[in-house]
Length: 128
Image (cartoon, rainbow, N blue to C red; front, top):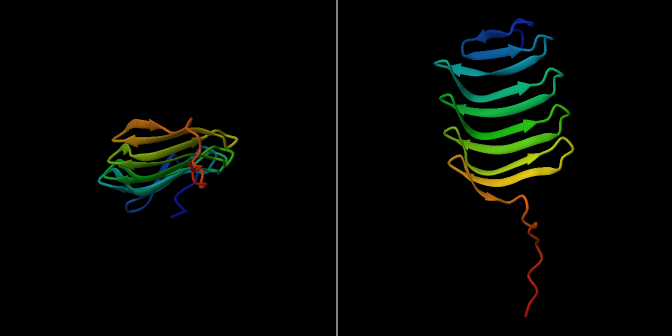
């Protein structure tokens, strides 16, 4: 899988497995194409070799967990997709690790912004 011709913009390795390369020779992306559509896990990297994203695809649509990182290695986003649309909790962080988005999505639409809500505690509420 890894000897796919460094320097090429896009190089077919084995039937169905594709690797893409940055001009500097670092791997840019890799995953399976079926019927010219991405399938399963695809992994993407920055030119510096740091992982950029892991995405799951079904029939060319994002479907499943989706994780992104900043080029400094700090996690940038965790999300979930169903049939190409955001579904469930999405968390995003800036380059220093501070939360910039914490929201719930349904069918691609944001239905709740959790970012500004106070954090839940495990302590019981005070009694009467």
